[in-house]
Image 1 (cartoon, protein in one colour):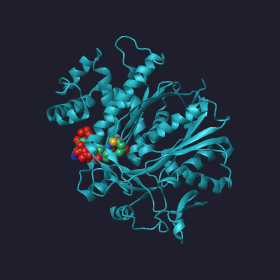
Image 2: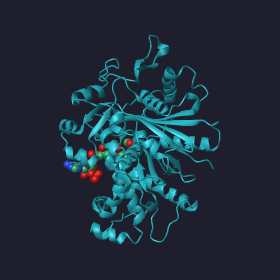
Image 3: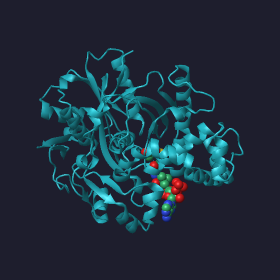
Image 4: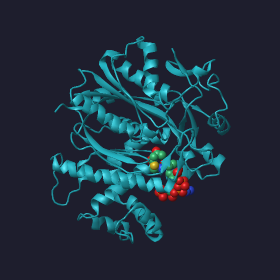
Length: 466
Ligand code: CAA
């Protein structure tokens, strides 16, 4: 079977941001809650002339330019997003239109692709569908590009407001990739009809059941991980010896990151699940200083867990204690911390957040001097509504060619801090796209929505500013 995976990735992050201290002061929140309880210092905010389509095109253009790709090298261009611009017209069609402004009209005509939606997990489905398209040799020697692009926008004054952000990641999917090859036959999913987080038609901000969504994320990723484990053992990808956990064979973790702390909690939940039946658990318990609580209802459904307030309280206490142990912290520092750096200074990117986490993991592990050759990354992708996908990949010996030039600050460019008043004006859409805060440079921007006649309603026009 062909070796397929991620050859390279490029990012685009709007330069506007709000600072957590200003935000905390304006909302009367302790800044320590944002810095440590959530794990946010800067949230990227889209300018008036930026939307998920032009951010996606900007990330894609960077990816193509740095790899000297021509549209003829690309057979498929997918965009995964939960910030769709049209009920019918797919977001990737706007991106194709923008790219053809640079590469020439009709240069992508031979290619294909769609917009994908399933909250934050759809990018992972898109990656695997395209990897399988290449494995099936339907690709005529061409590569695929998957772009994940979103603006995470919550109501002013809501608990979600400090988990906002915006940005895109474009991923190049190829045979014999330089960066990471997907482990074959182990990608695993779960799916269930849920209302933890959703955005009805016509509504700009989501309706969220915060606590429920947090727990559902943990449960769904854990279930997908169980399915992954079964496949990894069955296919012989991982062989366990007595007393070992499958997480011992995952060298690095990259998970969905609505906010940094959620990643830390996801790792804790997974390790507890994998370790509690192993000999090492008694040493963990000793360090935590309390027994792990068990819910009254052994079925452990999300409803029964949430209704069991006594268990929830004790479990919170145990989870906090577990996250203080040397056992957790050793794994956290070695396998996850680097993937969370970008989230702290950019915020939530919905579909793009886990892939920005991957980008962060590679850059900051490289800067630490870690040799990543043949290291296995385990991915925990979650989308509200809800579905989770767990998969893994092996970092290739050629990864340094791609990673050595990665520099998050340089790639974002000089950032512009918004006052809370300016941010709120942008949030309420009070500034038109011709009144942008930043000056666009070598990027696509939105220049017009709608036309003079009714048949051009919703017609979006973009332009490349050189
Ligand atoms: N100093 C330090 N820490 C503090 C503090 C202080 N003064 N005050 C509070 N904290 C800590 C709390 O102890 C808590 O820490 P733990 O998680 O370790 O317990 C943390 O800050 C968060 O505080 P709260 O528990 O009070 O939570 P909140 O009311 O601020 O809400 C949230 C947090 C539920 C995530 C909310 O921001 C929200 O609804 N966000 C949107 C939904 C979301 O992101 N869900 C995640 C899963 S769903 C998903 O992932 C899809 C997606 O992208 C949306």
